[in-house]
Image 1: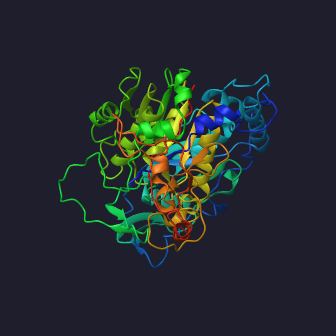
Image 2 (image 1 turned 90 degrees about the horizontal axis):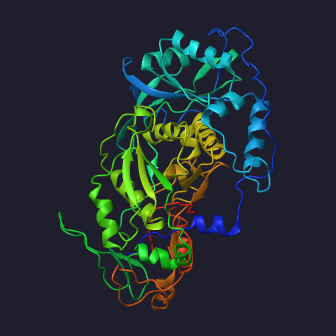
Image 3 (image 1 turned 30 degrees about the vertical axis):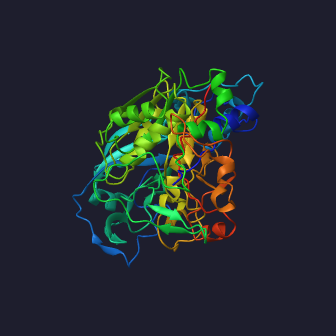
Length: 504
């Protein structure tokens, strides 16, 4: 069966010269105004609304967790004074506007903190309050926008006045806060909230290839018996199916002229964000040799754990996403250095988020970051959404292009991979900020339309390519709307990784 097709962002962005943001003004260059103007006291608290997961309800509740449970690397998201936020927005717009004196004059994380971050006094008030409740403050980001702290469930209950409970959701055990957290009213203008107080993980964007065939009469997808356990995969498929390989990617999206100009990713670095290592780095080498990419001799692959974060090892299930990300990043930019950046998940924080924060606080962050995970906005909560938006905003100010998979569930992001939607209309908070490029998978319509021979050769070439040209496509939608898509003739279900590259 075909794999998901790709949207070639680097071609779109290069050809049309799109600027991510509009015009703006320069930064203020003045010291930050302190927003904490009253004593920080637990006697007057405010509630941070919108920070309880939909699953944290009485039906799923299984009681309080052990108060001694260790919660490492929780992230407290801060915010800038309003005038500094406005100045940074204008600065970023100016940096992305051709002809501006600020054009591509990127900032460092330290400059962001000094010129646009919260005041040192406000940060000290926040960290002082955390320490007063026994938390360990691990780090304040160089941008001044994130406080990384650790503690126990009992300390979270006491400080933020929210109880951590065990939940049973769709047969799986989870932990989460049952009430919206609270903070001292004096910190209201500098604290957004805790980015995550649960162990619900964002979902990888890939879909496994199921054994199936398309019925010649009904044009419907009919299940085929799975291979015996332990059977080896192969490169050939039965009639009616085409495997979309790197050579097909290059043909369908007309990479040839770009490669012909020498734009192959040479000298560039693409970082794929994960919470796992790949099962075997040899898989990347085999992929490139099998599909004719080895001739691009500058391509490389390595794994890092930025900021000294904990090595996650191999997380079974997500390791398939990791190697797919690395392989198809290399398929699109075959001479680029592909770097997998991974951190281990903690009880409350996605390891990929720890990796993102570490990368954007480096003295020289990578030019391209690709993220193939997602979580609906309601699942992330107000603080979680703010964390991703602020991180991508920092990346934009540093000249980092952030590409994110939009997911395959259409407007049912909170119900991704579920047989029925129950949480209502939602999109992925990973992909919905103004500072990232969001891309989803697509469906090809050639089989249903009876035009396979128009777009595919009967035989593969030496690197298994068979596509002849661009193939008509629409966004992939795994929600119930997919049935309507099928009625309109879009029946094949290709799957790609959203490699999300910008070359040149």
